[in-house]
Amino acid sequence: MKLFSSVNDVTDIQQLLSDAISLKKKPFVDEQLGKHKTLGLIFLNPSLRTRLSTQKAGMNLGMQVIVMNLDKEGWALETQDGVIMNGTTVEHIREAAGVMGQYCDIIGFRSFPGLVDREDDYAETIFNKFVKFSGVPVVSLESATRHPLQSLADLITIEELKKTAKPKVVLTWAPHVKPLPQAVANSFAEWMNKADYDFVITHPEGYDLAPQFVGDATVTNNQDEALSGADFVYVKNWSSYNDYGKILTDGEGWMMTNEKLKLTNNAGVMHCLPVRRGLELSHEILDGPNSLVLNQANNRVWAAQAVLKEMLESISLT
Ligand code: AN0
Ligand code: CP
Image (cartoon, rainbow, N blue to C red; front, side):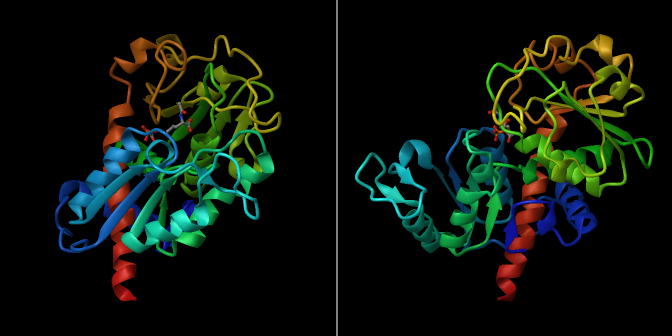
């Protein structure tokens, strides 16, 4: 694997999943694989989990890891092509990515969407430029439209804890005060569509995800109906895709609570974090026995380690 930007870059999901689960049991079996190899983790946006879990995954594989918050510590980055750089930007992504490729064998890159120009965000312009100009294998640490390491960790979590072969998995929209990307929801949907689950998406009117991500999911604006008999409930806010980047409602009544949990099959409640308590998810759920948020966070390490392992193996073949 030379690129991990979506589920479509994975040739064998079952293999990746079983690698992740066995690495969780024996984290250091491949510690020679990454010897003398450098992993760069480059962030254009904040991060806690992605930064630490991917760093830990690289270290478990014996890699040297360098991390840079490019937005705060680097030169102001220009991402548009063909512009005369006589304004505030100092360095073009063409050179910046190319330089980082000189120092790293694999690079992880995070770049959120602008949430203004839908076409540009959904074309993954910045992420694709970074891949092209770095010239080395790249792992998405969340791009404009997807967060595949999160989704793989979420899939691991469901596979570990499911009690039936085909659980009911519900992705529910939650309220938020800031316009957030659709990336986590898009990506979760994309991965769930590859799994053989009963997958349902629920959101208020106007929050439909892009059709290519919805795929075969059942979609309803009736949250109670969606939650009925659910085995897993994935809570996440996203801004509107159709009225691009906008917040259309305060979402009153959409927060997941213990009252709503009663509609489910004692569901495990998931969220990628960071979560706004009392707004997206109730305190009682986060502090209660149904919360799986730390299981998910833990699995971020094994998801990243399984992906980096595949990349190191393909580097050593060339
Ligand atoms: C980001 C998002 O929704 O994409 C990152 C989540 C992992 N969340 C926030 O900006 C709060
Ligand atoms: N879930 C997740 O990606 O968290 P961070 O933004 O803190 O990395």
